[in-house]
Image 1 (cartoon, rainbow, N blue to C red):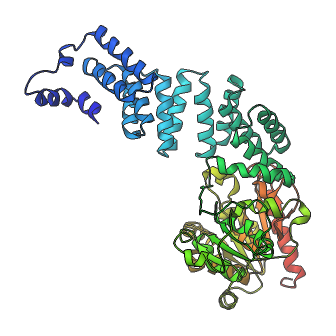
Image 2 (cartoon, rainbow, N blue to C red; image 1 turned 90 degrees about the vertical axis):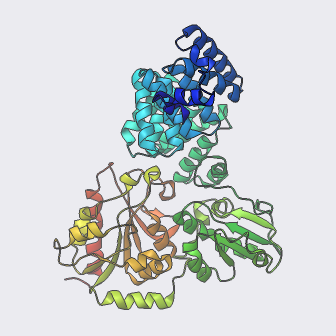
Image 3 (cartoon, helix red, strand yellow; image 1 turned 90 degrees about the horizontal axis):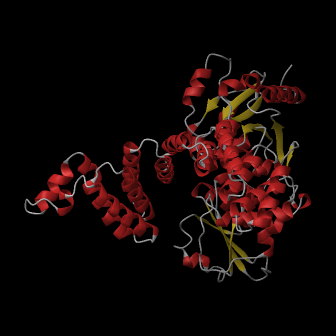
Length: 534
């Protein structure tokens, strides 16, 4: 960028060369603070009026005169942000802070640029500098708190900054959105529900707050109201990506003699969970076209043979398929199906599974693992989620599962995705039977399903493995943090989505050992009752 070159002494040389050896007029005015200030005021006024091109000309002219004019760099940075030139914007804002170190606004907007570039650690450092130089900088506290919680897994530190922002500007819409999420993430579902009601009565357009109200209500089992609010996810920044295949949105109309396209959203676990509604939908419609992630295609085709199942990205490329057995009349996202089929606890089916693994592959894995260990075959998954879904709070180190691994007459098999070799190697030699890991079963989701069906039970933290095992109808024990996701509800040992899943809950944050000991005791009792021990 020309600003950096100028500061290194190259800009003036280039300007002289471009003018045939003559020094530009602006350079002759170098050091003239009065002219520089007049140009700056003109540039700032042009920026305020939305004339970004004129603003850039004036602000660059300021820098021709005063290379250290921090405010000119600042407004030039803001202009570049509005034009989507994030690299240029970051250079300008860095220089603004360099020439005026106590410049909280420059640090704040630089933090916003880094957030857009997904450099969350750099964003947090900038927001921290902003509040250092202005301790009542509400927006900086609010964005720092959000970044720490959602991207860097620093939950308590982030919560403090959101609370500070709340104290500074309790009626700021952005602050209210983050505070509603904070109440939800702390497990105060009733408080979150009341607060969201209060906020939405004043600001009904705050879709993030409406979505937080949905999740609070879902956690409390208030399904009817919750699913209506849950539609607001389509209007927020999140995992939902709006798509239009050209068909009318389905809003519960009769599907007699009608076909419907159901398209994927969110992650694998969400698609599996919401797929429990597909049998209900297929009973109403003449035909269903189901789009899903490629990893789920074989599993869904086998489980829903009457439907047409397509991988994501191929729906628009398959008009002939969409036309069979007739024109598609409606479209809906899979996450909208519960609004019509899961309106209360009684509407959740009692069947133990709705997905079907490959019988031949189940037999293959049954024979393969039978050679490894006698007794009960237990699947293990100990890590899950991303920073934005509180990965650190919901995961457990494999070594910490030692009380479970010590239960006699059990063979343990990893159903954990990701790189686990270091943890498995560290475990070797510490117990007589190691945890077996088959990468070929993990790399292919259909193989994972077959392996799970070959096991007697799965023990997992809060991750997609719980959804897969539960949807297959396999006995599953889920180890939950003190504040689990909404789908696990506020309390209780049962999970309405999957009758075969049993929940073991933390009573205190970061205290996994009581949960692990309880699971180990229950597992030992179960093994003994089956005659595999003693």
